[in-house]
Amino acid sequence: MSKKKSKPAAEPAKKVEVEVEVVQVELEKASWEYELGQQVELKLSQESGYVEGRAEYQVSEKSYYVLYKAADGRQVSAWWAGSQIK
Image (tube, rainbow, N blue to C red; front, side, top):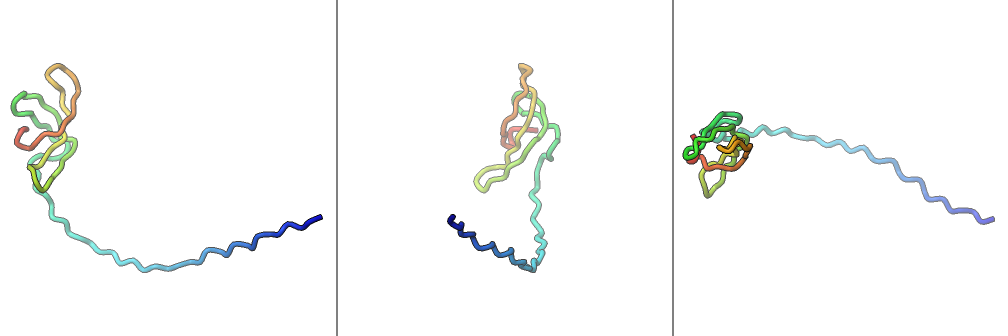
């Protein structure tokens, strides 16, 4: 009979202690014309809905993701420039 060679036992994991410094950063709050959940109206079509999201870009005006009921009764969601809603 041949003897199987056993693998050496794995070493137990070493416990490592790490110091973590918590740094609180004050973020500049963006001034948004419309709040999340606020009811808004599309200027030209006069369809109304609610702000579901917001986006800010370096090269364009602030955008709002609006969930609204279209004139034909469908539920629609789309991104709109701030200047296109009221």
